[in-house]
Length: 524
Image 1 (cartoon, rainbow, N blue to C red):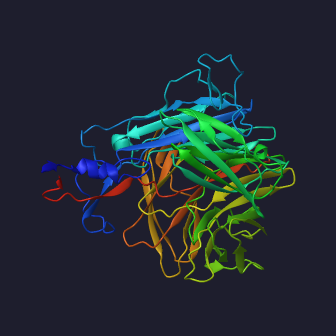
Image 2 (cartoon, rainbow, N blue to C red):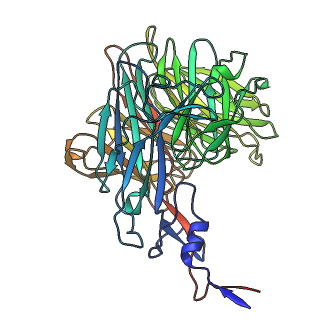
Image 3 (cartoon, rainbow, N blue to C red):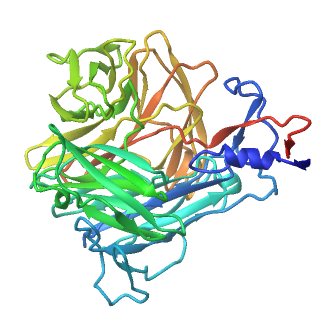
């Protein structure tokens, strides 16, 4: 009989979250939500992927990296590192992928199964972070700026976030584009994409790993799956990105569609860049995993048009109660008491000027409280009128359970949205404005959001702010469920340029079993 020892490290790694592995540190015994026999530990490694920002000659992109303070030191006592590096780009991939650069001219170009992989001209790290609690920034105005692939470890891994904000002064893609760089995964949902002639939507697939990934793309319209097989078996080489134009995946132009991204081999990061001939452009981030209830936080008070796109991806139809959480309570939009979603089919509803001058958040819950059919959804929100209109997207997002962060806030132009969607369950949250990238002292403010309401506020700013800063949202003990979003408004002349980023929980910690006196496993 042989005794094989299973260490706590092995257990922690086995149970690690997708975004990182658990650090072996002293148990956080103060977590009342941790199941008996387990402890909450900070992740020890996390990954982020930023897509290529823009091909515009009049675009400028700012990157802001940040990690909140508070994580315990790793097992080796090191503070850790966090940095992004340029990725290669695959041109002319399956489904008509676009790319930058001229074929064969970039040093290091090589052929791959999916097309030509163009290596980045520069591999220096971008926004390397060396300490928690203070943002680091970088800018570029290059139309050939590549996608970025990066990782953080040690005390910088929990909550590490990078905001990519692009301002395009003119052209079809003009406006403000914002994105919290994504974590790699194997499946993503994007309600709200379009293959219509007035839109150009690219999905950017980025592989963070040293082995190839194989991805399938499926589009679903109002009648179900859109015909076409061009989205199958897309190869994404190691440390490279593949942009795919969605209109090349189908011969049927569709205004309101849903995109499902599935990595059959490996994992990728995914985000959709949508450009409208009249409404400008922005990033559509992936929606939260399908659930029976969804929350879409942060509709601006001056929204002139709101469109809801929703899908029930499972085998069952879904009947939803539609409510708007306002500062005074939950209301039902006129003429939309319920919404019926047929299984596998995308449904779109124009909610027009839903907010009527009062900021709010959309809450979708089952009409039958016992129904469990999963749904996913996103909003396209428009501000402005006539030729001076700008669009942004708000996908369904996860609640803030422990902590969420939004980087790249400046002296003006940020709005924080908090929603407590359940009546009788008030949310109390602590919001911390970090030190500025160029200097300043952190400031903390506490907000209480009554259950069934939404709160929009100008967030706190650090004292003596220089540069940009980050906002960290943390529910207080005993708080009810809370969801959050951050809007950036940076007008361009008479254009109300803006972008909205949801603030899902950063998953900076994981639950691992508490070690007993003996974790040995006996085998014959």
